[in-house]
Length: 151
Ligand code: ADP
Ligand code: MG
Image (cartoon, rainbow, N blue to C red):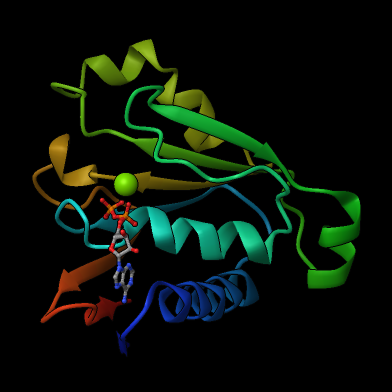
């Protein structure tokens, strides 16, 4: 699927649409989504839309310096949206050097936990090819505020 957006808000709406589609196919974790795109493409903006869908109250910031951020998903949201995810995990691998450094951030634990829905910015920093099981979302920068989102 391809979507064209012309503002951050439109990108957030597309994110909500995509997340709805993902969880309609799989209501339980682990789910691992890779967000691919250049700096400023809109990966973190997309995450803000995902966080709105899961009614995360905290402000979503780019986790470039902390590598990962974990947001709790409420029971109410699980009922309302009909899924079983307890945590939204947002990672940014931009600063990691190689696959080995994933151990330090307990990557396997996060990835294999069936309470988690995991979004990873810059997966291509670590993996040349999309790893097995990764749902890839690619954001391409167009003219001005135009972005193409490929799901
Ligand atoms: P990334 O995480 O990919 O580096 P960000 O989401 O942090 O990107 O930043 C995207 C920037 O582009 C923001 O400043 C946002 O306001 C701007 N922007 C302009 N148009 C769009 C759009 N259509 N979709 C997403 N972001 C947009
Ligand atoms: Mg970002």
